[in-house]
Image (cartoon, rainbow, N blue to C red; front, top):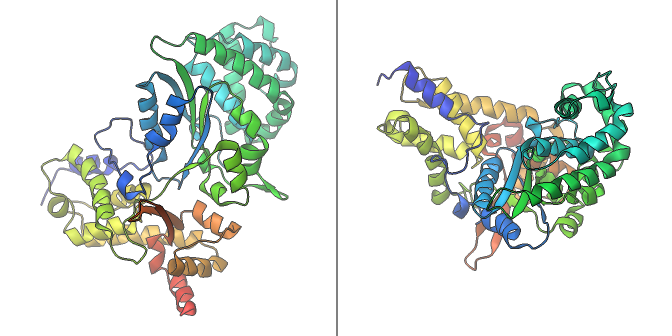
Length: 441
């Protein structure tokens, strides 16, 4: 079947794996029933709606599982319930996920709040703080002028330049932190005066203010002796992290909720909501049809927007078995699903997508996972594949962070949530994994 090159290009771009869906997007698929009944609107949103005092909540899951899409839905849900929401993805602002500390997050929050609340709050408290620190900071933004001689707009631009340098100029990053760290408490105090003014001047109909800081789950683990940057941000600095005078939601790395400090996290923040994978197989390795249907629907809705007249299992894919194989190989991980589909389309000159194109896409993705796993970890993956359980250990946490191990949840017959774990399906075909499995037999 011959189709125009524009159709293939449109289909290819419809599967962009790095763009979260905006709220109310027609391509959204509700996967709550096959994700252990996790409901971000009820479990995070309702607490903000009901609470008479500020809340600080955590949200996690595997990178690329769909958290940003869910958080954008939450933003819309809260806005419809009189909550003014400032949402931003930290790694798109001033934070380098390869090297993140608390000071970076505080500065990024401040810059974003200055930007989003500029029409309803007076920036003077933060600018006064910057003025007091100017002698220490002016060399880092390469501005010879004295602060008092700048316009308000220029003063604000200097703050933005300072935070931008955290990400753009790595050699300045540690210098900025060293200059700012002694002043983080006074910056938080100034920021709260600014937030109080914003809350007094919220647009008509809004009664609460919430800030959602996304993408902190992408922070790369950095160890410093017995401590890690995860612990420094979410535990050692928890009081400051929670101290902003508004409702707060932060994402955090999934491995943190499986660390030795998990109970400390719960004591400080309450239960952390986790977004698991879409369950496409059962713990007994049988195809879980409701989950598989949801994954197919994710593909179908994106295609329907481009070519509603085409059949998914005849016109887009050569046959239903090829489509099913691609869906199962995603492991129920949304970004992997989009990446595999986009790669298969990229290997196609005319529809339908052939078995060879899908097989090549799977092979390339599998090779990426082969390079991700360290030699001593194959035996760990083999054991999890057999037991469907993980051990509370740094090696397993690393494999969770890298998405080599995936978490699934379902409701049992008594309505209780059951958790289980498995290797990413792409790993099953890797020779090193097969050898590790054979040693267990």
